Image (cartoon, rainbow, N blue to C red; front, side):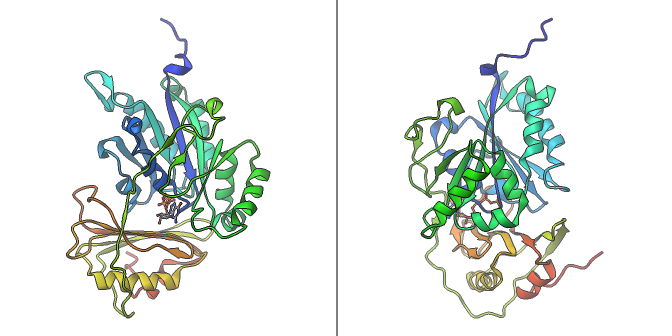
Length: 354
Ligand SMILES: Nc1nc2c(ncn2[C@@H]2O[C@H](COP(=O)(O)OP(=O)(O)OP(=O)(O)O)[C@@H](O)[C@H]2O)c(=O)[nH]1
């Protein structure tokens, strides 16, 4: 029996998509997945915590989206899970003996160190039989990128490990932000290609093999708008708290906190608006990330609210609910901003410690 490894071309290409919290990974992923030739893509989303939302925000056939959870250290636990998920995928996603996907994209958590994941993908003997790492893409947010680079070593690692740096949020960047960040990135990772990825315009992504990537006009695609902006964003007076049904909190090193909240009953539009105003008062460098998927009374579609540091984006409606769960789900990741302070600012009761 031959023990030779399969030829490189026969192996399934795996793209690792990483980037700091809120830097635009899921947004780009949703744009890519609109391309016809991306239909046969298995998407593995590594998320943190039981209220993880990303897998529900990915506009892709949900049967081709797999969630793996980090419930401990952000990047250590994924390795066992990832190996298991990838190994199982070879038969689990087959129909009539035929594999239903031709490539894999793994989206990491925004706090992940990609190094151990890359190491696993490139050295694990069981994975090497079927898979090969083709790209490491790192999203870098032009608005927060410089600050993030200085303050968060995880972001620096993500940028250093990339073969391709995808610069997002150019539409909101101010004069000089691009040049300042670009020179830092060149110093940090001179070998990486850099691409500007404007939102909802034709963008070019290095989807081909790194050696074929010389012409940046290749592989352009037309992303669709994953979200429709809501026009009814009208702040109301403060002082009204949202109902809470369950909460959970988890604290990490480096003064990082993650916690969440699930709301059983739909919220009113006024509650949502007022609550967004309260979130804006909390926004700043300590609010690394906020994601909320809301069931708003009278609205059939789910409403998403994103917060990234000092930016709280206007609510957006998703075309459909991703699954049968109609509860509102909120998650926070903060730095030196404990749950008690957030909940006090939002007039939410703290969960009991037992
Ligand atoms: N204006 C603008 N907003 C963007 C762009 N890319 C992403 N966003 C917004 O930034 C916020 C975070 O985007 P996501 O795609 O969820 O970021 P992420 O990296 O997947 O976030 P995590 O999974 O929490 O790490 C959302 O409100 C997006 O709509 C962009 O190019 N321009």
